[in-house]
Image (cartoon, rainbow, N blue to C red; front, top):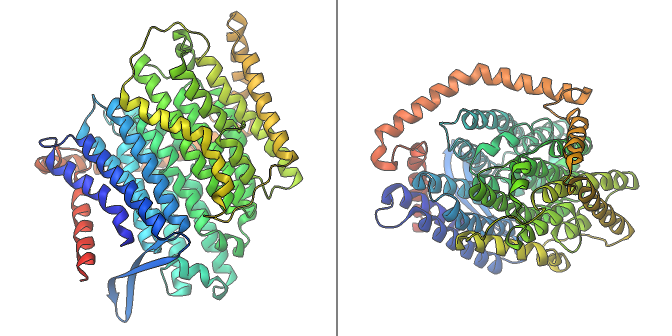
Length: 581
């Protein structure tokens, strides 16, 4: 019955596809089904607390071998299902305000698919089922990033995301094949329990492929270039993609297969990649003037922190940070979306001109950015306590530098945008207030969950001298940002231009330093690869539109039409399971 967690969002897609706003508005269907998904996930979490239940279903037979799909219910997987459902619900509620002038049916259909894919992924105990949902996430992210497909930038961003994440998709499939060839099972839990039977060479190969898959999906170096461009999607899509779905799936993969990584010894490769990603993304954030791109680089930075925890034998610390990050990052993106709707710009200097210093704006922003920076008593502070437990002295030294940079770019955003009060009274939509207020409250009190998190997932943390130093460094970043960016005279523009020229030398766009050139060359390879496949993607897109035209009575001519057949099939299969067939 674990698979019932998936049912509400699947039903949401079917209802949206066939009702077409005739009886119920699409947003109410999606929101109500997301709420039902949260209720079911929470009930299952309570019922299966401290248990480990696996449900297997025969899929098909080849000779004497029966291929099975399986779902798992334990603290880790069901906790993630609750988090995904909660964040998704709040973002869908905000979407009522944010997307009210857009194509409702298509948007909520594709968002429901996106959420379903992540929910299916976190409760899967079968590698093949995990891979199916992993691929569905790639498909749905492509559809959502290209939501405004008439814009060339959105279309190109979707293609880039699909190409770069496809490298990870292929790597994941290759790793699964290697493990299956050596174990004869597609069960994730059974494979992890029998790692000792797999030859070391195959362990290393499979682990390396899984790491590539995670790096690609979670936009880590050198694959990170797709994520900032994905900001062409609606901001609500960005909020979901950055917090509880797409990029989180790579970290989640590393967490559940961490015993494989440790047994193979490949964790030594994760550490340097994480450190490179942290510093490159921090410099890129300091170089950007776009609110959403700054937040995108901050996501890459935070995900690198999680990879760092896995690399230091602390996967549960990475899990705690992943959950905390889902809360404050969704808050920050919703705030960015609210500013975009109200003021029509993502440029931090243009927003500065509006003088947006009202409590409804700057209080949630300060809470979210303080959480991102690791300032006590907000979420990030507690996340750092869990994340850094296994750090060596040298890694602690590097981490405090990273903390300073994170705090600096976070409060550069804050003090640039929220610096004085010139705006007239703004009437806020209730559908925007509820999720922002909820996420703000969780960002203030949610970190204290660390003290009882151990009763759910075993976790180590320490409030030691290092954490005190880390907090002081985060505050120094805040004060440095205030000193550098709250200045309103003419020297402000000169100072930021000078700092941007310095940081720009370390960025993908600047390409004036060795690291910039290296990243640019990689981007060039991506562009060439994109060019080679461009015609193929155009033909695929053209075919999709043709199919949409033929089936317009089903789904209003949207790109997501072809998914309906798949979802109907899933519903039928689930009905057969319930019937015991």
